[in-house]
Length: 231
Image 1 (tube, rainbow, N blue to C red):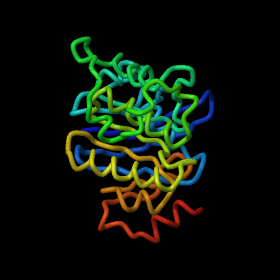
Image 2: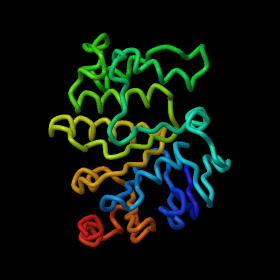
Image 3: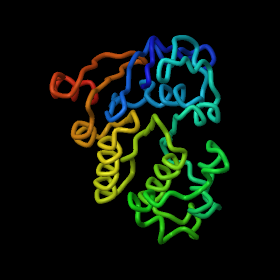
């Protein structure tokens, strides 16, 4: 569904990504891992239209996306859950969720009940401000907001960062359920190795802005991949 080929990206004169390639299939989780500062977030920002890339191609169902902005990427079916969550702190949970309607035609501006099946706490907190939620609750809200857009590709940037263990387990169950439904491709950027290892169908390790190791679950060596994350 999603194909990234030979992607390069710069911030000013500094090159951050050096020919990254990966693919993400519907009903599968593709994990991107590596230490801090190797370009994982920059990769997701490029796919999500949050930062222009310098070269290479991004295609969705065989259609080149070119240099889309974030709104166009959202309309194309790409949803991004950023590192740090980026919920609107002064808006209520309901208002935060409704921002996802911007990518949908007006006829689809309805709150899907399955969102609250995935994250029941959000239904109880609909009128609470986003900034008053705990970190784990904000992460649930950020993922739910992305799902409102009915994505074909879901990009998750460090969803376990700063989250209490019980919420990490819930997020893992949600990712597994979304994968098993088979309707979307999931790209997971994650440094929590055991969480990522237990969920992913394929792995891409990034070092210094380039792919250093890639393979499918069952084929890639666990210790070799762990070494890439621990360097």
